[in-house]
Structure formats: structure tokens, C-alpha cells
Image 1 (cartoon, rainbow, N blue to C red):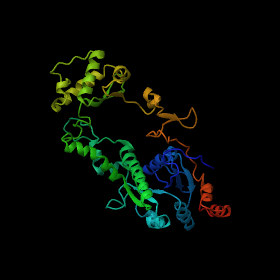
Image 2: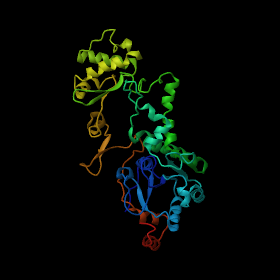
Image 3: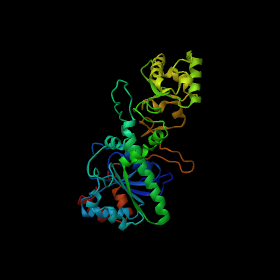
Image 4: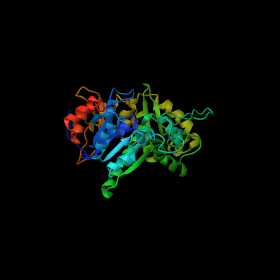
Length: 397
């Protein structure tokens, strides 16, 4: 099986990615979408329980038994011509396989060796398992995702899904670090090791919250601040049809526009004593009262009825769309933000972001495991007889 030449700003960059789950595959997908030649090193045999074909897209795949000496040599021969490597294992696993940074960088000193873990390469938690939830909890950032029940109890954190730790703090910061290290290697001729820990990344993401806290805009009981569901003008409200409306009229001029449109189209008339009046906008003592009034108000019409006159304005209002609804939104449709995969009637998935004017990106299919084994071995100079021997001895598949 051969693969069409890649397009995108990373065309010509070769990255070896060892199979894993979560942030590693997502990072590999992003790099492949950007045009890199991402070579997935898969284990011979079937897929794991968390294998997600969409995240495997755009790669070439080689299946190798990493525990065999011959398999180790295959990997070292592959990395000799690569620009970067991504490995997702616990600290020490690659060293035990004979594929740690010392062995690999000895073969290719220009290589960027990226290590993706939850806790990092050192520290008392580093040997142990974890998931997005445990890393974001320990970083402190999970405590800011709350909704205060206003019954005297401490707010319970709301799980933000895998986006905060695995994707943003893990995969995307790994990509940023890898690209920065590639730039350095191009300038100096020397590669380096990247210690990308999800906990570090989640902590780094919380810098914005720390900035708000130090600026006097975040404090006290979580769920009572301007950006964490405390403010009535930055909140999600249920509508008459049970669907929801996101109101983000944060700045005073946008709040004024919201009130103007609601007065014009919904008959809202606020006196100066009303907690929703523009003069009372920042009176935190009255936020719970204002929010209760807004909750009753927005339940009087359906989500789409509100959006008909609020959405295309500076009121900063949007419908809360489901994953199934999002591709049908007029704005996303106009930007072709979703495209069908596998033909016109296939599932619609988001297109890569951001968008490049001179080197546009593309998505490519997800390969079967080992689909490019022979092709990749031939590229590094293995003769057909040697490839056949490796297959017959189950070193590759």
C-alpha cells in the first residue's frame, strides 16, 4: 500500500509515533493533518479497547515486535532518517526496550525525542497510572470547573471531558513543544528530549485563572466569579424547549446591546432597581437574584426563537449545539468547518485548524495496522528477502 504525498506546512517532516491512547494519537493526528509523514509503530495483532480510528488518520503504519532484538534494530533504522519521535509509555519503558533517548540519539543526534506521560518523567507520582481526570485534579485547574449550588455546601467540580488534560494540556502542548524543538534542531543541528506531562500542561493552562486571581477578578468560593458561572451575564440558560442558550455579554457595551435587543424584540423593560439593569451589572451581591430572573425570562421562548434576533449581533449570544447539530449551523457550513469522511454520506468531522493560505492542510485515511510495513522497510534499504524473514519470524506484520 502506498500513500499519496502530503500537503501542508509540515510536508517533508518525518515523525515516528509509538502507538498509545489519548494525547499521543491526538498529537500524531494533528501533525499528520499539518502534512508531516507520521509513521505509526503498532503492535502486531488486534486493536486495543480504546483504539479510535479517527485519531489514527493520515499516518503510515508499521507493525513491529518491540520486545525482539530484530524489532529494536528495525526501529533504530527507522529513526535514523526521522526528524522526531513520540513515545507514550511510562518512564523507563523505552529504556528497557533498548530504545531510550541515549540509544536513539546515538543513532540520530538531530532527532527530537518527545515523551508523553501523565505525571512526567520524574517525581513521586511518575511511576503510577492516571488519567485526564487525575492530572487535572492534581494541577488545581479542575477546581475551577464548578457550579455553586448556593445551599452552603462546597461546589462539586464538573468534569470537562478529555479536552482540558489529554487534548489541550497534553496533545496540543506536546505539538507546540515538538515544533519548537524541530526549529531549534534545524538551527543547531542537535536534537533534544521533550518531557511533556499532562499535569504540567494542565497547570500551565491554569495560568489564565491565576492571572485573574492576582488581578482581583477571581477568588472566594468557586462558581461565584465572573467567568465560572457566577456572573448572570456569562452563563448558560435553559429555554422553553429544554435546549440551552449561551449568554456571554461580558463587556458593558455587549451587555447594553443584549438589553437593547431584548427590549426591542421581547419587551424587556428594566427599572434601575432591577438587578439585571446595566447599573447593577457588577454588583456581585445581586448576581444570584439576577440569575434567577434571567432563568425565568429565557424559559419563555425556545432556543432558536432567541437566536433569531440575538445571535447575529454584538450581544455575544449563541445556541448550545449538540455534536450532531454543529455541522448544520450556517456559520460552520459557510466556512466548511465540517466535511464528510469516507464519501458524501459518511460521518461529518471537523476539518483541521488553523487554516493556511499557502500550504493548505488535508486529512488522509486511517491505515490498517501494518498496512505500510513492506513499503517502510524498503525505504530504509531492506531487501525483499530480509523483509520476508522478518515476517516469517513475526518480528514485523
